[in-house]
Length: 432
Image (cartoon, rainbow, N blue to C red; front, side, top):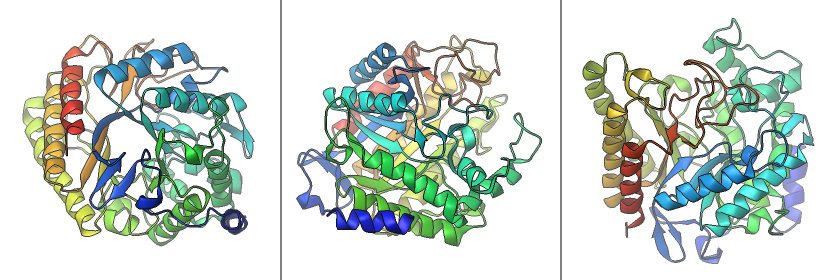
């Protein structure tokens, strides 16, 4: 099926990647070691607003009025780049999922959510914003690769705690089978085709002609684990497939960088000519560098490890001569509190430090061209007690539904953090 789709796209006249010189000037494109738009360098500090498609829906869970307010808030901060989940898979009976999903069953797409994505892009276009659209997910909170494997094989997903009694090793092994499962890959490619080939129902503009899209991302944090050969083949084939459908937009992997045992490596994963730029993620607490229960002891370690890790990502990107985007980083509130009224002393210190490190490298043309912090919650607040997960009827926060609500969210009331963000948004935008 994948081969048929690729041949069809080639025959339709979209079969070659366009050079930067042949692209419309208002599209983000790569020139040498950096991005450009309208003949000027494009460097940015943006955010993750993964729920934009769901908020834009007129169906269950949608709230267009709130989405407009959030976009206005972000615009007032100067933020013009958003990373958005553009594909999600059901069924809604699975735990820790985005509900509703774009695709409840294979090949059946929720028209309200597709129109929700249309609405989000249309509103972003009005504000001069652009989106990185994520098309798959290694983790199950949006369905993603494990759901495609389940659809292909009929097997149940081995969920770890708190949703099941399996280990994370079991889940990761199951999800990484995706790359070697032709049926699962075909199902995912069908999703890609449906989205990339879409015409916006509000603007009437085909997605491939929309400058409000910066890039297509193959997946959120895909990992090769012990299946690295098929993983890299999937990256190469998937990126080429998207380019046959849409030669105008950038394509990136969405990987976390170079993490050794996770089976991901910037140089290997981004070597394809159809991958336009590399990505990396930095998680001080998740990586085990920082313990919010012992901040004075572990914070200096986290900063040291962050700088070292960032250095390795920059060096690898320079080796393959491709721009680098730090598209995820986050930091918890003091004492790991999920209470929006709690203090953010260490988070603010970390944001200042990591953004300063990224900006310095961007100023020196050392690969980094963009940053997206995780994640924007805006006006939404947790509705339940601490440690609670998202449930149907709760507002979408920055934290995905499988994680404690409020963990890494940035609220519109976080004045100290927002001041730091606004300052660095300006500094990134001024780079020449």
